[in-house]
Length: 119
Image (cartoon, rainbow, N blue to C red; front, side):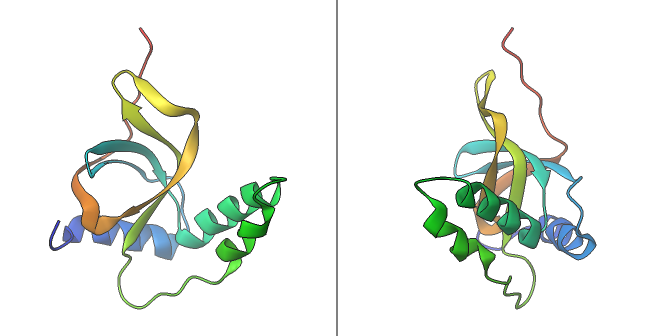
């Protein structure tokens, strides 16, 4: 999107201000369909840092996510947790992942998350 959709920016700002992680959203970004719940960036960073800290090989990268969120203006990214990339009838990963999506790359979106099945 040359100019991000004001509605999705407003949704991201509300998630950031309320520190809520209950807003479900599905977006199309660069051809990928990502579905899950939005989290405030600070919560998302904390969770990614925890995962990296617990990794024997990636622990040193956790400090990158420990830095405070720098906020100048409206949100520029969506921070998904418990999210999946939908590929046909399959959600990847099965357990849900942590995704950061630039709002400017979102070409379509809807409130709610899509479920999938292997039927």
